[in-house]
Amino acid sequence: MRRLGLTAAGLAALCALALTLATNGRAKPSLAHTCSATDRQFIQEAKVNMTALGLWGDQYESGDAKAADVVSESKREEKILAGMGPTDPSLEQTRRLLVGMLAEYAKALQIQQRHGNAGPHMYRAYGLANYAHDVLERAQPALAPRGCDLSDLL
Picture 1 (cartoon, rainbow, N blue to C red):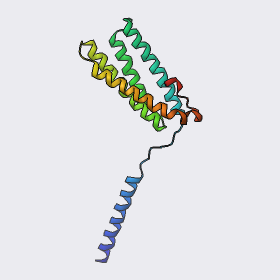
Picture 2: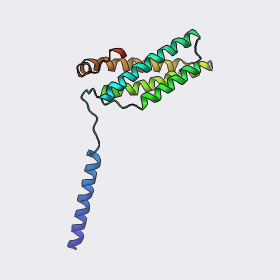
Picture 3: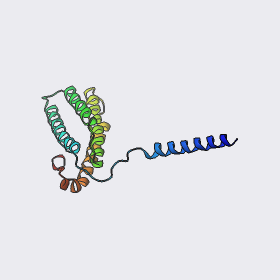
Picture 4: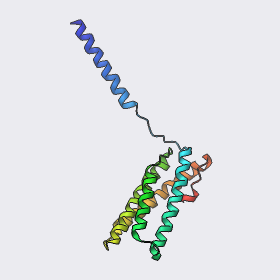
């Protein structure tokens, strides 16, 4: 009887330890600003991609590029940004917003190409872009002294 009680107590302690490790062992996201190499890489990549998308959009509006080309470019840029992993919480939030913006922009162009109402998707794309701008604007004072200049993205 005593052996059964000790075994049960040992199992209970083991379960408690396992639950503690499972709930507390996960990495907590950093709330402090950082400026790691991956953060600087993300800033550079986002700048290049947003510039390229702007040029593609201008060419589309002037009739020099087809909607399918701009959609393809937008999806390519979406994949690139989705694969990046900035460590700064503001840059990670911006990454998620830009990925969503690119997806909505591509949907809007696809719908417009089929002569549908692209307005709701374009509205969401601009809303996500504006929100990303606000996040970057708030993060700029903390990131600039650490070596991450966001002025090219603002």
